[in-house]
Structures are given as structure tokens and as C-alpha cells.
Image (cartoon, rainbow, N blue to C red; front, side):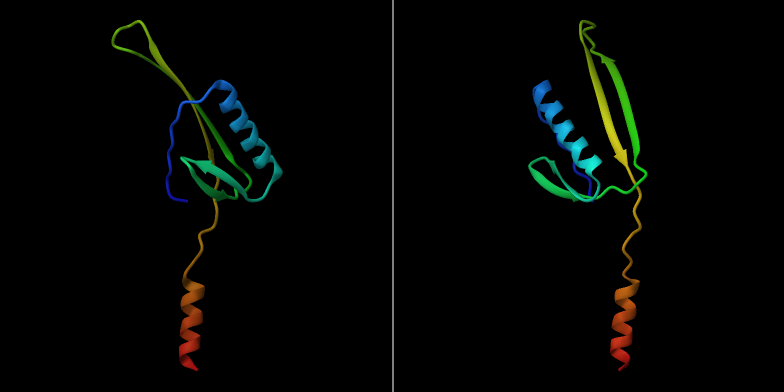
Length: 96
């Protein structure tokens, strides 16, 4: 999957609903649809999944506010699809 990043303002309830739906799909196993920035992607995480959680607090220059954030990341590994099988099939077809 190529990199996609999206950002939009939502209510806490909207974020919770999105995360709840994502959690249900993840727990269900198999492939599911992930909506990112108005686009849909099919994802099929393998086990095990690495769960990364990062929290940050960055004070503003004014000193009266700070930007706070939490980032969630899921990471999994999958075997890459090789073009070797297609190349071998083409080679054997051209030998006939």
C-alpha cells in the first residue's frame, strides 16, 4: 500500500466511532476496508501486528498553550509478490 495520510477535524464521538469500527474489523480477521482521506483501501493485516502508540506535548511559543497529540500505528509484515513466477511462465511459453 502506498503511503496515505489524512487529517480532518472531528468530534470526540466521531473519532471514537471510527476507532471502534476499525477495532471490530481488525478483530474480525481477514481483509477489510479502510477509509483514508475520502479513498478506500483494502487491507489484510497478518499476525502478529505491532501496535505503536506515541504521545507528544509541544508548548507553543506564547507559553499559554501546548499542542498535544496521540498517534497510533499498526505494523505488519507480508511476503512480497514476486514477478519470478510470471517471468518463468513467459519463458516456458516461449520455448514451445
